[in-house]
Length: 143
Image (tube, rainbow, N blue to C red; front, side):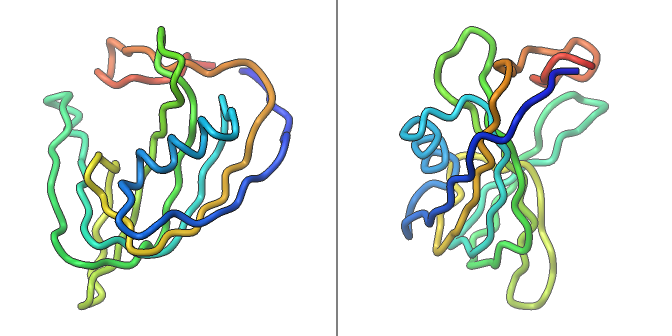
């Protein structure tokens, strides 16, 4: 299992209308983040999320076409095997106006209303995601 040291913590706010994944990837590029842990809160104008069907080994995506609060947002930054760009893997739990919760894997098209983030930048080996034959997901190597 690789070990990491905490290098620094980057905090900031995304702009209204940003695509949340693209904006976080831009922050990672700007600060040369290779490996990091992400936490965020705020609200979205609309969301595009997915649930991974383990039996079918495919994502089932859905949209929430209304404003929602980000109740919890967590993810990480690493690389896809063979790529040099940062890859942001993010999950959100969202709350709607009736107090219902929605959640899942974040897809492109999730639009920020207001979003504050913290990224814990880690020093250590480069973590690369690669296809995993057992799950069908792109995962880090096992410990």
